[in-house]
Amino acid sequence: MTAGTFPTVARVDALPFEQVRLTLEDGRAVTVDLEAAPRALLCPLPSGAVLLEDWQNATTPAYHVPAHLGASVRAAFRLHRVGA
Image 1 (cartoon, rainbow, N blue to C red):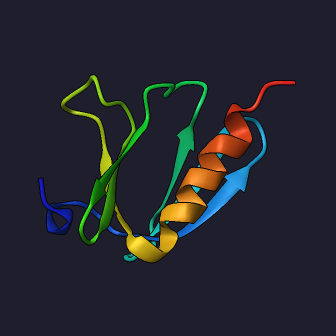
Image 2 (image 1 turned 135 degrees about the vertical axis):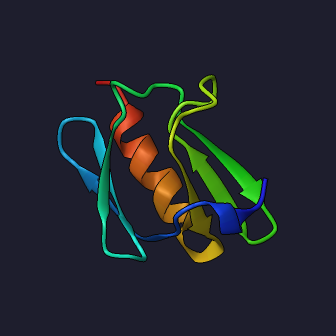
């Protein structure tokens, strides 16, 4: 697995209703619904990480997360996983 084979995340935004928006380098925006994708996984790499929407599904979308955005992705996903 190499980061160059996946679209690269340029921005991460935590949204209401258990969602995270990933803005990709090419300008596309992808919204990940954490309730619908509870098996999301951030796999560390030397150049950052790869975010898999569902680690149990080989056809799930995957994204390269540059090292400087890793903490933002982890924070966005945790913010929506905390239950009251």
